[in-house]
Length: 90
Image 1 (tube, rainbow, N blue to C red):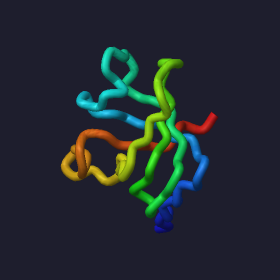
Image 2 (image 1 turned 90 degrees about the horizontal axis):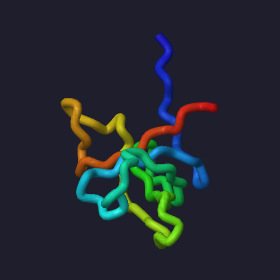
Image 3 (image 1 turned 45 degrees about the horizontal axis):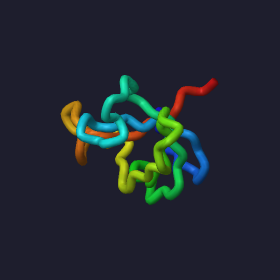
Image 4 (image 1 turned 180 degrees about the vertical axis):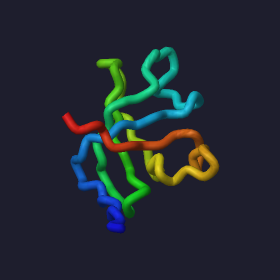
């Protein structure tokens, strides 16, 4: 059986960011997924992200050490309740 090697996220790759309820960028927002750009990748699971909000007056939002959804244990994210995942292919 061939195993798929996880892909290292390239800088500039657009991914989806799933914030937790305590994340200030989702306060008053109805969106539970936000577009983000990888600005640094540590490995296949942990990245730093530049988050794009739907508020045109919001400053640039950065999130550090965001873990990929595949890093979950028992159906829960490893660190915090925020995570990133690949955007679906268009």
